[in-house]
Length: 436
Image (tube, rainbow, N blue to C red; front, side):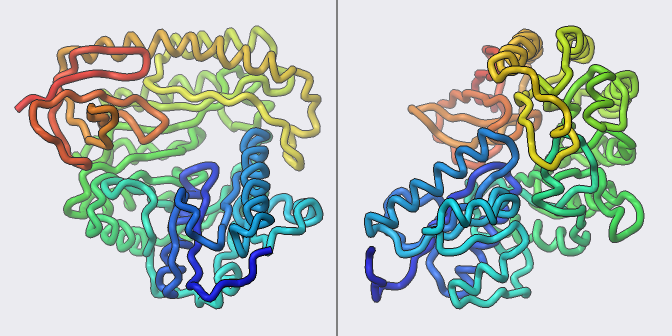
């Protein structure tokens, strides 16, 4: 065991899972810095002496990755490379008692809402005056803005309410101040995230206030793109579409997980909506916001899913031709209502169904991309790799969507907007040349 050094502590934060976890890690970083404690994200130099693993507990694969990451850090501690290993996040919230028994070498475990308690381990104070102050782990031109915590939905497959609690909205003025601070740091694109965006405001304002929040954010000078993630289709607040159409800096982009399209599955999943209602909603969204990109997420292999259900889902994709689709194999989660159902579909069959569904979407995606050849699109340059620039249009979010390979005759800046004429199209990416 490495003896405690006289050197100043340096904390490395490892973040697993979703963008909401990433924001939590950034907030922790901001608090540590404000307490004069050195902090880094995903440090490869191994010149730190303390690690915080921010875990994900969403599905089996995520849980396995989290456990393996903790074990890797404990091995470094055993070899004298680390003084302390702390664990926080969803896995810790959900399975703390079991994990404490299995990994007693972890110095302390924390839940998803125990930041002040964690700071005490560093003899640090929780500074309430740090309104939205974060050490960004993303490139400086984009950031995530978490507008609420928790979820009041009762989807039968989902364990998020067990780990994140009930829905709690942040006040509009707090979010505007946080967004203004991000813009001052050079952020040009903000992605609004929550477990469920469309529920925003019901708890504190007694009505859905996402449209009002969007107007307030769209007024911020220098904020060029605002992107909406994780909307719930049932009782969708149509006013959002009016704001999206009226405000130029709100991307024509909506991430709305539907999970399935068979009424049998939608009912079993407790989604509070039918296939027919979803179809009507999609048509209305496209009518109100012409050219909008709709992204959705699906689940394959839910208990009781039949081949007919899978074919119905494929038919729904062909009918509505989503711009972006992600898919998960069903994960049987303890303490969810679906856990009482028999998980009789093998992992191999779940994966096969997911792949067959994505084959349908792959063809749709290629056709939609080919339609963009010859068009001139506004592209945000994200990075330079292997001598070429990679960027995104307003129809693409970070990491989950398409990229544009950008050819330019002059040097481009990361975080710069350029106009690009699309010259080639692939299944999930585009290629083009800077014009003007």
